[in-house]
Image 1 (cartoon, helix red, strand yellow):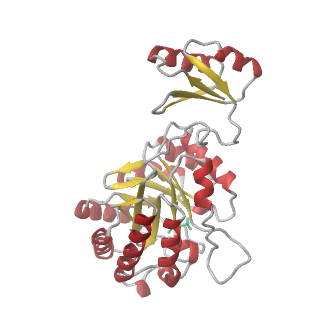
Image 2: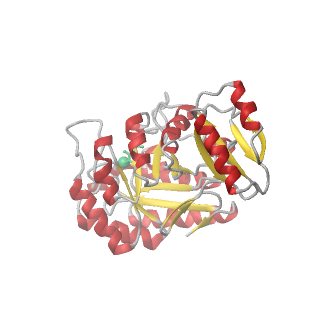
Image 3: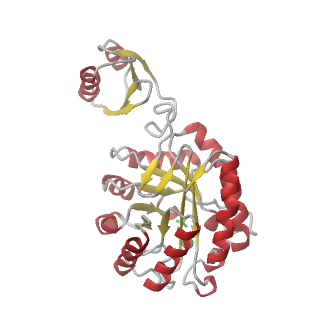
Length: 338
Ligand code: PEP
Ligand code: MN
């Protein structure tokens, strides 16, 4: 249920509603809008709760939240969430660009990439230190050494770091270095990990599971939001279909659809979403045209020599061209790219 406060409701009236919601055994989320404040009451609702809350001082009305996800729903918060981390902003009119190698391989490779992507207009650096590889015999990442290299790249360029955390136990370690925690497609429904990542207080980029419906994905986001962490970015990275000409199928209707259902910013990853370098620039531009609030792009100094995902990575020149193309489209759709 959403308890909609009257315009000009006082802080004491809002605090009273929060107290009442909690007394009923529900969780209260206060969302302050520009027009009025709402208190989302999350949990199992009974009919009599509604009447009880409705008679509180300063309450305008109590309405049910129809969507199965609650805090993520646009019904609860009609204003768009903007995630800001240093030079990176995503949401509403802001388009954030996260670029960097699939995996951190060396200081030289990571710092060179950070410098190049920054010069071309990226506002955050990505790089996996812990890699979720299909085969246990593939490169697993440099782990803490990789996190240290990312911190060096951040110190050199000022770009915030986006890096993946693979399990709940690793959250404290990864959160010590990362500015944004990435939860990968293979972990989208790892609920303990979602809760730990949320509780770290760091913004979380939640990739769509390759076989997950949008509803399952939003319910996963709800686990993070329920820790009180509002800084969640949804990342469409493609889904499994019968198609074989691409690594994954990238459904771009996800972007406008999510904008109808949730206030959370939507990032698109055309690198994993296509699996082919040659398809990335146009699909990045198409994502911007669809209204994406962010892009995640794999960039490597020498994709041919990459330890992972070289076949879908852009080199520096290709990244620069992609940024130029996306900037034109961003301007046409009213998005601000740094
Ligand atoms: C990645 O970003 O390198 C990655 C492993 O992505 P995903 O979880 O989408 O496969
Ligand atoms: Mn990758």
